[in-house]
Amino acid sequence: MTDAVSPADANSAATDGQPQGPGFRIVAQYVKDLSFENPKAPDSLRVDGKPAIDMGVEMNAAGRQDGLFEVELRLS
Image 1 (spheres, helix red, strand yellow):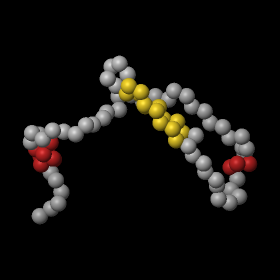
Image 2 (cartoon, rainbow, N blue to C red):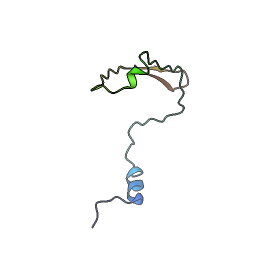
Image 3 (cartoon, helix red, strand yellow):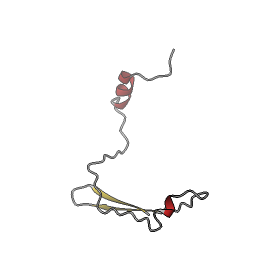
């Protein structure tokens, strides 16, 4: 006996008349703007102790007329 689900079992579960939940698909990816600053180089590359890491994340989403959504992700 095994706990693994065979591909045939997985397909039958997906088509047994039960409604499928919502899903999403990545249509395209692109980099709109990219910059990198290292104002203290090359001294910032020397290891003097624990590094201080400060990271910010912002996300915006907007619907488009064609039924798609554009997601903007900002990392700083």
